[in-house]
Length: 273
Image (tube, rainbow, N blue to C red; front, top):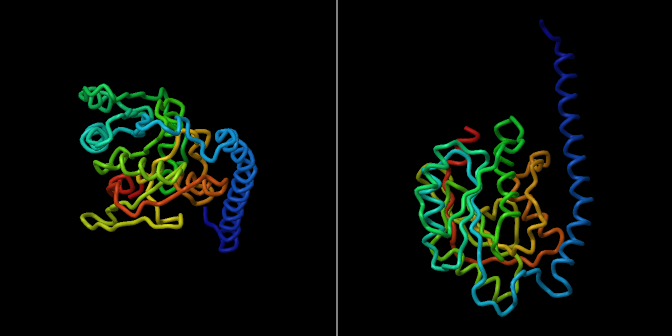
């Protein structure tokens, strides 16, 4: 069956209008949700200036290093988990949540005997869009949100399964958050922009493209903020969408001018290319 130019143009306009409607609907949904999120933030602060769940004078609160993973067992263990276990800050829980991973991932994590490591594999995978770029934007949102419910720590340090934290990541970010009474703090990241080519990213103020997912530490008092599985409709990765929403509701945020995270290129290459 052949189509005329007019028919092709009409089909293109229909798809474009559909995408615009999706974007508008998602923006309105997020705007309405922000009211509830502001209310929950005030509740979490309980009349104070920060939503910390530990006592102000607790010198060493438990920190959860949260790693979401999907079928990268050996890389997960060799890179992300080992970087968490090398932390100079020792009071850690390393929580690995699988997005319905295969047995190879479970076998790999079973080789780690450190009692601080906990692995939970979800019984089914999150529901994500099929388009590769849209999938990349929100893949892993399901295990990330499950980890927020499962984490025991007073602070949460996100890390992707193919990336790594610097050895002092938790120590220096937590110290900065405590010193400045912040609810969320982020740093610079050393990012592999092309195979073998690296660049530092991260600066203040918070802007898209100037923050990396794993360079963040935030209070578990913010766990009511979930990673969006539909932020792709706004053309936003779920991690940036989360930090932007934090800023929107008035979370106390700060920046540390120091590299505490190493971001490798594999995640993007495997999912999109």
